[in-house]
Image (cartoon, rainbow, N blue to C red; front, side, top):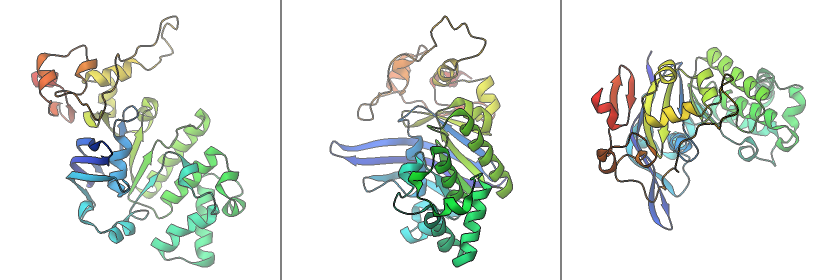
Amino acid sequence: MDTLLTVDNLQVAFNTDDGEIVGVENVGFNIKKGEVLCIVGESGCGKSVTALSLMGLLGKNGFIKQGDAFFDGHDLRSLSSEEMRKLRGNRFSMIFQEPMTSLNPVLTVGRQLLEPVELHLGLKGEAAKKLCIEWLEKVGIPRPEKVFSDYPGTLSGGMRQRVMIAMAMICSPSLLIADEPTTALDVTIQSQILDLMEELRLESESSILLITHDLGVVAETADRVLVMYAGQVVEEADVFELFENPQHPYTKGLLASIPNVSDDFTERLKSIPGNVPSLQNMPKGCRFCERCSFSMDVCKTEVPPLFDVFPNHKMRCWLGDNK
């Protein structure tokens, strides 16, 4: 498969009252056409910041400090604001984590759906409205003509998320970035949303960059997985390889903490001891060393590179130096 997106040595920083803080460091990955890549990790690890940097939506205090990002032949870092606007929502688009804050409460659903259609597809009037209603129906919204005229606040969380998916997919983007698209939804709606995204991906032959902290979602949807910790990629592998043969101590800890139906429920769930280090006070060496039961002297003083531990399987750990 051809490569659609290439990210290399991405470093994202923010200007704060306490000075410059690096939120994402040395992140690199590829996404092939038609592939689903999941970025997994706990809150604050840099998943969403990575995605927002690619979309050019870091805000006034955030900036890409170094690294490269190429999307289907376009150097994203060299594009002007106007050139980025032509791509964003058209060639690649994003489903945001919280649809209530992402949808404008004072504009109708229809008005917000019409914007990308008019801007990127050049449709107007009844033709544009017809396409919007078709997409509302396609994402499983009942009475789409009525919802077209409704305001977001009148819809349930699941319905708002479906509207967000329709907005993101209506221009048939090559890449869909989904940031925690099932957060705060009940399990039934969560499954429906994931099935819908997969159905639309197959229909439009899109690639998906899925950001989540839910390993169950990863197992169900991913082709490949990036595990992030404290702003860095610590492991990368095929989804089957990652679950069957995890290598990084952090990944092993995440997988061990998942409840299993065969577990003895009289025992406490396993957890990773300690806390994620502060962005203002990162360890000198490995960022996971203070929580790792395999920590060695080298871990405390030197940053490990991404080792190729197996074919198409990498991990950022000095244990990988012996593979």
